[in-house]
Picture 1 (cartoon, one colour):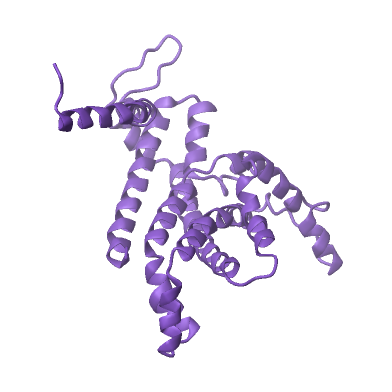
Picture 2: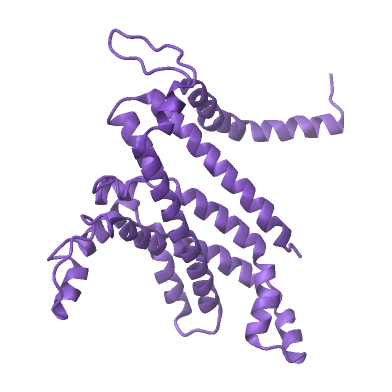
Length: 294
């Protein structure tokens, strides 16, 4: 039996999509569904099988002071890193997109933190933050200032993680802005010059609107990044002191692999997914109205 042309194209398309679809279902959708169902059961212990507990895990979460603390830390971390990363990425992209001496070297320098392994980055910044012998304290000592435990102080531990994240993520987001800037027709700027528009006016009225699709993409990815940090916390602070630098995903990691409470970890994961989904929908609903694709 021979297939007609339309059916053959349909079958061919699904065959091409099948490998990616299988991987997506196996490693994304199936774990999400499995985690959701696991959140309604207790964790199996030695001699005590798992049993259905309904909403008990969610009730426990609502009364878990550590959960509320790390959730607050995470939102503070997101508010501190997302705007800075996006704005810095845009500034760097505009800078290296212009007529700049050694432009290729500057672009490479901005992008280098992105390609470094996260563990290596954490160890580099651990040297900066180490009391007495670290780079920051060496600079402070030149001005007669006392040594400070940057990662051991609850008031500065989370801020130290924010600085590291901005340093690493801004160069990555810069690449997308740079590609978008190079896609803008130079005829638009020439027309603006003829009309007497200044550079700032052209940037605000023409460049920024045309960059909104990229901004939407960058903001959504920056939001996801701000809720999936584990490596840097593990190397630098272990979530301390007193959970001052612990974020939600790191708390999930601790509950699952240090406390071996996989059911409660599944509950926390469901909440994390709901938060990320809600933030993504909000961002799309708000920014989509301001996106210009032409």
